[in-house]
Length: 105
Image 1 (spheres, rainbow, N blue to C red):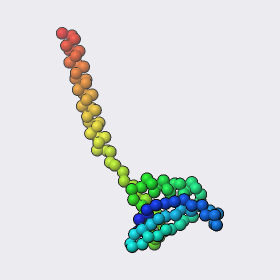
Image 2: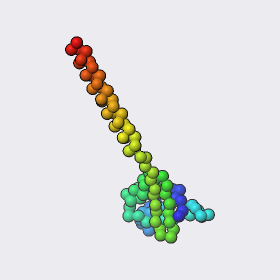
Image 3: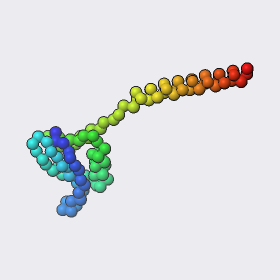
Image 4: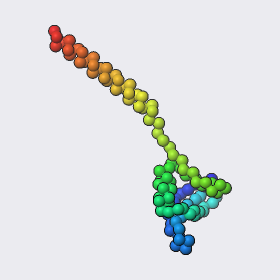
């Protein structure tokens, strides 16, 4: 696998078609590979996927481009937030009940 360092969209005037050019390095090799795409929309989609990814690689044996993404796990925090909200709601209800009892006296 070779690390992808950059992508650029190219309109090849000779072939009269759109292409993506990958800047690659790894395994003691620096290279540029060009791949034809259907149009500028496909090129833009690949560039956005590259920019949003945390890591990207190219496998010269298969010609496969891999974009990896890292996502934060917010599930744990959400559970804690819900518990805190429930406790706050219960405390508010208890305080309101006490105020009502004081008002009756």
